[in-house]
Image (cartoon, rainbow, N blue to C red; front, top):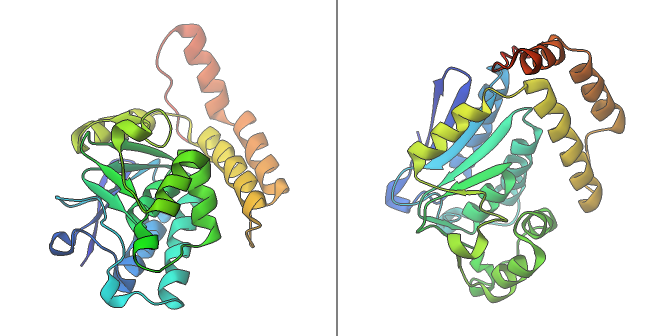
Length: 248
C-alpha cells in the first residue's frame, strides 16, 4: 500500500508512503487516495489530514508513469475530491511539496508547513503543462504573483515566502495534528455550508462541470441554522463554556 489511512476519533489521517520515491505519486497511488477520500466521507470525518512519510510531503508525479490522459484525469479527480469532502482538509507539509505535491496542498482547505518546506511547480523545466483548475487554485490560494513565479519560472518557494497566504501556520506534523484536534471541535454543519459555498464560487470561476448547485448551498446553510448545534452554540456562548457539537 502506498497510502495509509488511520483514525483518531473524528480525525482521518491520509499519509502517502513512498519514501523511496520521496512520495511521488503514480496512478496507483492516486487511486488509493481516492479510496481514502471515500472512506473519510463514509466515516463522517470532521477533519482529514493529508501528509507524507519523511523526508517529503510529495515530490511530484512519478515521471515513470505520467502520461496525458488517465493519470491527469485521476489527479484532477483527487484534487477536486478534497473540496467535495464536507469536512475541513488540512495539509501537513514537511519537506518538499513540488509539482503534484503543491497541487495536493492547494486542494486542501488549510495548510501547516515545516520551516524547511518547499513549494513549486517545475513543469516548465520538464516540458509539461498543468490544468486550468490547478492554475486557478494556485492563483487563489497562493496569490497570483506567487503562482506566476512558480508556474512560469519553475522556481520553488519557501514557507517564509508563502506564510500568511498559502501557508497558514508553521509547525511539525505533531503540531498539525494538534490543530486538527482543535478544528474537529467546530460545528460540522457550519463547516459544510461554508465549504460548499467556497467550492461553488471556485467552480464557477473555472467553469467546472458537475459543480455544487446554489440550491445545495442554500439547503446546507438553512440546515446549519435549524440544527441542534445552532441551539447548542448559543447556549454555550451564554453559559461561557465550550460548545459540544454533534452534527445534528
